[in-house]
Image (cartoon, rainbow, N blue to C red; front, side):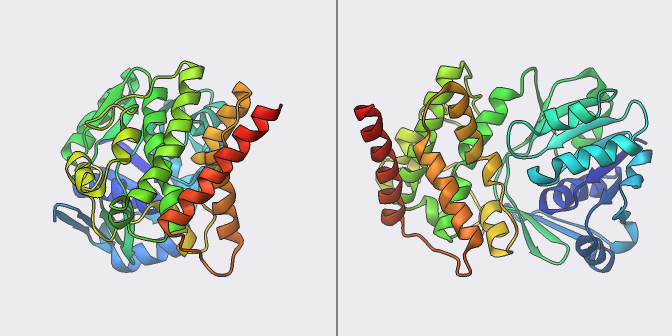
Length: 347
């Protein structure tokens, strides 16, 4: 049986790894001491928005804080936050045996490149987790929204496909993952809005003012992607280019047109909101910040996403967490966009 190691025992790592373990795979976890202690006491309890549940008792868990545990791996799933990718790459480079496959199941579009640069003798693949996972309590992880795992197509990955199938986590394979990653990132632009709103995702997305904030951020990103020659993949019933228009319809109409976006646990929040609540650094630099960097490469402005980055960083530094009303946040983003237009008009 193939040995799978989860490098990064956070919400995503514990959920995906826990599902694989519950499906009969040989899985080990590498994580921080806090999570390791919790899992050794509680085991892993998993739940899904459709009321499916799984439990792995503590005695069936193999979890370590030492990256050396990955030395026995045939497949490593990297699920750490983006800021920790360079450290993960360095630690894995020192312990992995030849032939180990490494998959980046992380946000952003550049983490696999960081891993690939440090692991030139290994197959490193881009992956994407489309669903939201929240930590409900010690050892308890809940999938709050739908979606299937996406991964770069590669012959080396075929021997592991059955492991994911047994866990009812089938892999959707793509010849080119960049359009898929950008499509996910377009949806993840809402993470910052949700964190600033300080509301559950379903409640936030049910209010037109917040959706208009997301539509502004997406339109800005889509214009840049078009200039860069990148066409986002279709991950939702609607093409990515249609979503900003649908976001702007009245609330009652959005309930029907945007039903898929609202098929989410009523209590679920974005990972960025959870990070902010826990006082952890967010991944803003690898989500909205990716749009800003793309704009810089193209010599274009990205005032909406740049302002969202600034507001999240301010919130990270604040002793009191903000809870932006939708109208106030929308006015803030419109002001940023209008200021940039005015500057360009006088240039």
